[in-house]
Amino acid sequence: MANRSCIIRLSRYKNALNRLKGLNFVRVFSDNLADAAGVTAAQVRKDFSLFGITGNRRGGYKVEELADQLNRILGKNQLHEFIVIGVGNIGRALLHYPGFERSGIDVAAGFDIDPAKYNPQSQPPVLPLEQLGELIKTRDIKLAILAVPDYAAQQVLELVLSAGIKGVLNFAPICLKAPPGCIVNNINLETEIENLIYFINAAENRK
Ligand code: ATP
Image 1 (cartoon, rainbow, N blue to C red):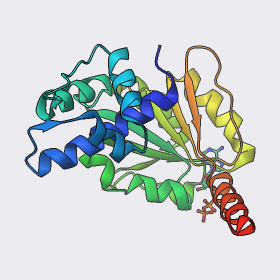
Image 2: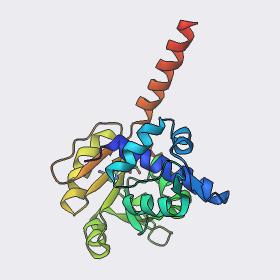
Image 3: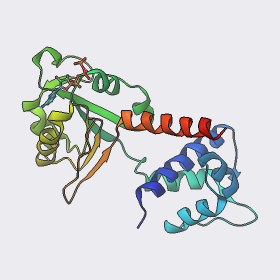
């Protein structure tokens, strides 16, 4: 069974392949993809073999075919609808980020607890939390992005899961645990920046 790091590498290989496709490459070797993803060529081959993808030593992989296979594995061959809960600074930015649409991700609506944020006419609309269950059910939405404050995150997680959401990307600065049957990926921007600062300081101190 592939783990989270392996799937992140597949996304990086897929992005590198799309760039190569744009440059009219017909074939690609594991070394090229390894360079793009910052791993070894052996790692690329190991990741591919988990999914039964085989190349050949001389010819490498056909770019078109490999891109199709990776897109299928990553679910890129279908449109995925998301909802965003919490339309503050982060939520609003995600709601209007044009890069999602280019990669087959469609933000169906934003939800907030604050009536001042409602805007049912905007695209995507911002709706009251009370309408969340109905939208998830009628559109069969499985994915949610949480951008609420830390104190509200656990309660909002329980709300979206009980409404049928299966995967959550959590931007609230608190680590949420997923109950069985669903997945929560926590993204804490402050932790990421602290991590950078630590390694920059460590490198400076070694000089
Ligand atoms: P802003 O500048 O709009 O206050 P912010 O990102 O600094 O943005 P936060 O306090 O992090 O504000 O809240 C983010 C958003 O989450 C706000 O729009 C807030 O109304 C909303 N929010 C807070 N609690 C809940 C909740 N329980 N359910 C849904 N949305 C919530």
